[in-house]
Amino acid sequence: MSQVKCILFDCDNTLVLSEISAFTACAQLANEILEKYGIEKRYQGVELMHKYVGRNFPSMMAGLFEVHNFTMPADELDTYTARELELTISYLRKQAAPCKNVVPVLDKIHKEGKYAKAIVSSSAMPRVVASVETIKIDQYFGKPNEGIFSAASSIDPPTSKPNPAIYLHACKVLGFEPSECIAIEDSRSGATAAKNAGIPLLGYVGPYYDEENPEEKVAAHVKLFSEELGAFEVMHDWKDFESILNKFESS
Image (cartoon, rainbow, N blue to C red; front, side, top):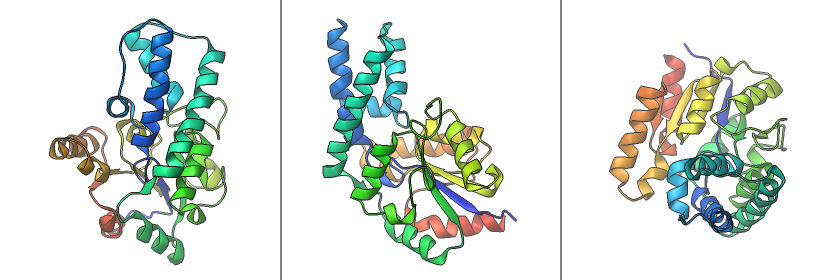
């Protein structure tokens, strides 16, 4: 039997429908950068989301540097990163919504008190806090760096998933071995981080039902999580979480 002691939740598009707001901000600033450096390509938020979901702004820009064969000074990137955070938070305060059926699940877990729980995100801490406050789930997780962990803010040097460092840091702070936890992730980068940290993975595909060509997107991510990344299960809707967890603990 698998004894789960702690549940680790990704934030963006796992708890909070936030990625399209965030990547709208990312696209706005990425296009400004590309224009400044004389590069013709322009991006829509949804295109960047499909390419870089689960990665923070500096990690996304590293990808664009490689694609378009350019770079920029670190201090300039820091300035754009700060602007992206401010712009994203302004969008999230207006647009963030909970993932379908997640709030009752969190409320039940919290009231029962059987499992420790935390948010483990690539996003900067102010963005994560803005997201969870906007959809009113902050009371379930406690303070930053105690129940909410950010790869961009909680560790030095900052990282981004798929680097497993933030998961390993969260486990250490919370006092659990990775094998005593489960991680719930919706993206390749996040799922890879959990896998490389040695944490049993539950893939989540709920948000892909709201995208273009949903059947194709869902099927691709089910295959990714189950075949490539070794998830113990793939969850389509949060209403199924309790039965999935019970099945895993009985295995």
